[in-house]
Every structure is written in C-alpha cells, then in structure tokens.
Image (tube, one colour):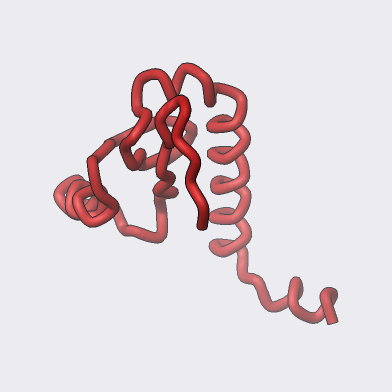
Amino acid sequence: YIKNSISTINMDELKLLQETRRDLDWLHEDYKSIRERYGGRFIVLKNQQIIASAATKRLAYEKIDKLGIAQHEVLIEYIPKKNEIVIF
C-alpha cells in the first residue's frame, strides 16, 4: 500500500515535502533563538527563513497573501512563549 501511495506523488509534491522537511529541521535547530524573538507569535517559514510573523494565524495568512506567495508554499508555525504550554 505504501509503495502505491508513494508512486502517486508527483515531483512538485515531492519537492514541497522535501522543502517542508528542511524548514522543520531548521526550525528545530534554531528553536531557542527563534522562541526568544518570536515567542507567542505565528511565524511563516520558507526556504529556511522566517519571512513574516503575526499575532494570529489569520494575520499570518494575510501577510502571505500581501507578499504574493501561495499558501501551500510556506509553513506556518506557532512559537510558544518560554513557559507556555500548548495543547493541540
């Protein structure tokens, strides 16, 4: 089943998955300094860079739209404050 599912992924989707993985790895590596600067905010990641931040997810999407970037091309993550616990 997994083999059949993988074969249906096109190259654009594979590239997007790989970029997302790199962005997540970068976020994890630099998390402490990112949290110090962006704690309590949503950040928008693209190509291992923070291209925007906002107080709400809705505002983050608005910023993406103003930048002319397709929403599926970015990763939006909430960065908790230092002692904040987030339950999803």
